[in-house]
Image (cartoon, rainbow over all chains, first blue to last red; front, side, top):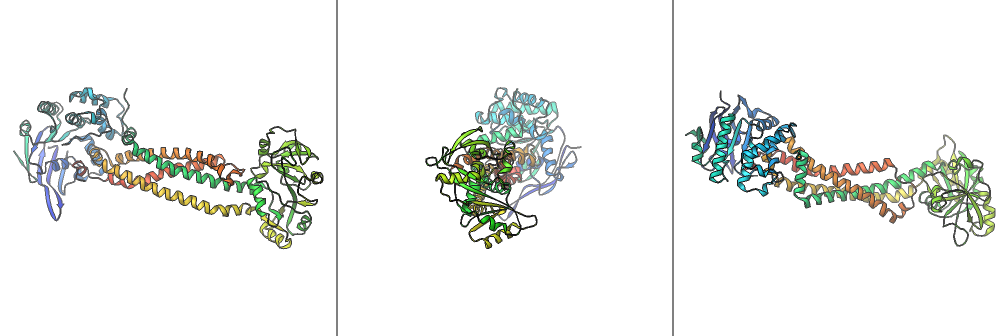
Length: 227
Length: 399
């Protein structure tokens, strides 16, 4: 049984008087533990598809099943819980909150999941561990303005793992990183995929990165195909 | 040990991000609450003073010489030093009016330090001990035997004004030495600032030639009406029957002041309402700007699991913190302004009744609630808009 299933998903936007399908009749199944990459040109609908999978954009038609449940039949709070417990997001831009330190940014998903700390102190330990894993153990109390673009990106990557998600949705996660750090992060992803059986769905322009994934999909004009 | 991240600490961090803007909001709310507290204190004190005097006077009707109604109120409510006289024969005429149960006269004299007296300018009230029902209830128990000739008691505030504090102090009044034998209990009326003597002393005082009063003159008559009679009706009867007097029914004491103040009250409250509306617009404008600035952050928060309630709570905390700090400052400034500026308002300066703890608490709580509510109302629409944002649109910067 697949972990995620998209059934005839279409997302349309009305622009001026025309209706454009950003995602057109997409049906795919993704098994637990798969590492999937999605490649395609800008504007091909990759980010929209990722957002539909993450429960932040409701499709115009079709259904998104997670563990057999249609996530868009959830209430707003249930959908938030789905995002909080099941999904880890990596955005294609630096997405840290400027008033919070590196550690606080990483711990933010815990705040929303538990309405505060989980009370055990485990969250803080985990945040520090993740900071070490992305090579920024010395930046615990640094604010985003004190970090480079690449460092901010790595903090955002660490944040995505904070709530032990089942699925990581990564939108150009290594965009701002130099080649060496990009390789480090990719190895980190693969390790998390192998060791913790976390499912990865990664949008990328980088075909070298895509080649390292177990399954490759292409988006073109909102239509998806296997590579 | 590091500080735990909570929605509250997160909200405080957001507020400290733009210190000037937060400061402006706090100042605006504090100014609003300050004006509200000042206005409410002013109005409440005037009303309280009038109510207290009316309740504690013990008489249903005041009878004064025609044209002296205002002066009588000045003495009773505002502690002003005034004198006015009418012939004592008025009492006999009043006795013929149906429905009157008791009458007692008083004579008001003014001490003039340079001419007659060894005390600062003050009101001396000569009362009739046989008929009195105004002063006697406030006399100390040990004076039950009454005041002898050459003895005086002073009102509670007057004791302080005269720097007596203790009894058994001699004072020179109208050329004679009076023994101050007691201090009246606090009445909360203008009587607290007077010196009281028995009207047995009047012939001697008149003989001294240091007061401008003729034998057989009195200033005021207090009347109690019989049960079942309407004081207003009796008041009208008195004015119709005795042309040389005016009357004030107990419930009308201070009416002229209340009427004069009603316009001031309206101005106060209209100003406060306008200030509230202005503050709501200011909060709305600032939180609209905040909402625009932070739309993307809210989108990110929603994408990583924040519920609508988390977004609402976060902004609600920010709004309430601003409102609460502004309100608390406003309450402090408002009270400071009231105590400082009230000395410039003659009507307040002379009033005896101070606001009690309950009235102060009501003003404080009202100021706090109104200041905080104004903040919440102003921020409501922008925060509602934020709550409903589609995460992807703001994350991609398409909003």
